Image 1 (tube, rainbow, N blue to C red):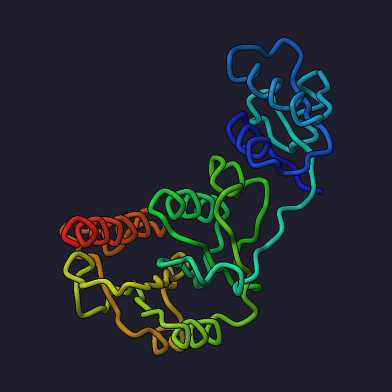
Image 2: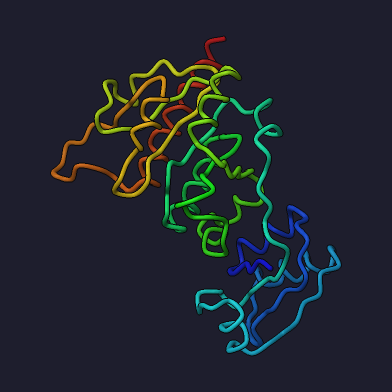
Length: 242
């Protein structure tokens, strides 16, 4: 059973026609956004119950639910074979463990036009309600693939024509100086650890974000946004010139 908390994730789940068992709304909660949830739920035939806030707190295991909690089936992982054909940009995460970072990366990847996010099966954050809330609805629109072996996945992607870019502080080229391949896969390392050695070796190129200040690195979700929108800008230029 999956728990979605917050207005935006629930609205996006309803718009994406995700099966929901029921929606709980705190008594006394109101406003345009709450009414939007009620209207969408009615159109979808999803039961809405009005409960005291204590019930929502216990159901959500948090008080940051904005007066709305949805209960539904677990978000299913996508199959990599289903997402490659129409995906010119893939994001691969090499051990991101913080669910807030994972959610933020999913949101950014969707905004930048990525076709999917690929995460490892072990030693990494999975799809939880915290991830869904941090993704602010993007999880309903962007496939997430869970890979048993990231290195094997990278080798398979190369066979499918993807050029693999790994973000690494030891990279030899700046992210904004890349001539991006038509089919690009960007690999991001985990918090504080960066890319694993074998993952680094399986990348076709290592790129870096040059730092001016005294801090040696950026939060992984921030770094992901910088790199992905550099790719987006490059593709926009290529489209205008063609």
